Length: 217
Image 1 (cartoon, rainbow, N blue to C red):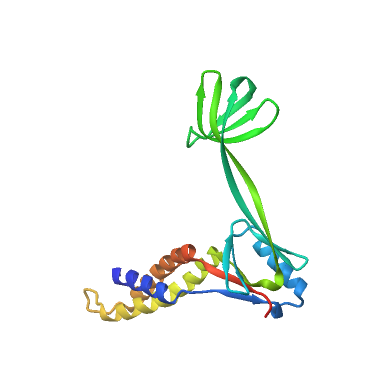
Image 2: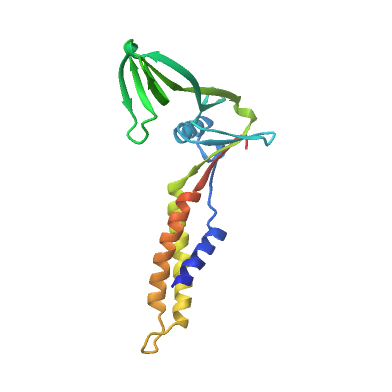
């Protein structure tokens, strides 16, 4: 049965590629296509390919507004600060890392900090500020936009794992015999199917399936 596990993994690696492609012609109108795109991509990590085949990845989603693709990237900035303790209302340390904290000032501002160090009557730390960088691209310059669906990868992997694992298990069961000398097709089929579902399901989650939207086609 160990061989079944190995063979199912190999089958998954070789044949488990999956993807779903959507085109404008698949929808009743361009507006519907754009609306479906916005629902799917607004919080995803998105890979964009332009008409000149250059590609880039945006970290925090994309949305189409007025024939313009708007991309969002969260950018972290860091700078050193020193503040008098008398100006601080509360310090809440991270449970997992006491060098990190949330600092509430008496004026109501809340700071996200790391490398926190209290010295005498002041506190030294590195403030972390997150900001969103926006990039706008005319939709007619976009070739494709895609993201990876991990759960679709699970379901696709489980289907492939069941088919390939049960087949391999059945064939191996035909060559194996128990102490009565009887072949083990049924147990091989069931064991191979279970191992295939688990192996390819887990692999499918980590590999995922690309969801692709094609423009101008």
